[in-house]
Image (cartoon, rainbow, N blue to C red; front, side, top):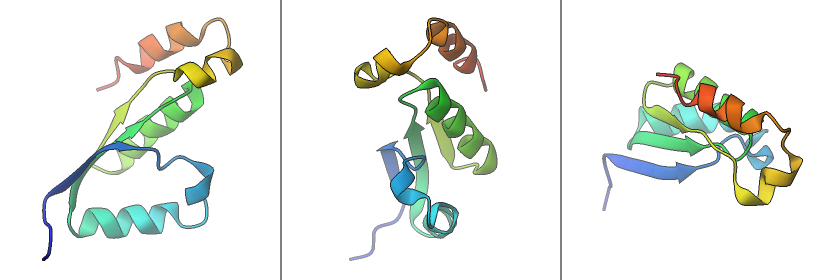
Length: 89
């Protein structure tokens, strides 16, 4: 069976495990059966990366935020930065 129109609702393609072939993988996925991806930010930095992916790939969307397990590593102004990132189209 071949699946078409797959929409990945929770991804972390900014994770270091994808460093070696991230863009090849995304190019292949988005050119074939994957119709959309939501890449979820867990920190300010990963949220910014998620937005960059969404700007590069029309089928990708960014979710910005801070995961509770990452909260301790964020600066005091992180929520303000996330609020600004959330305004991105």
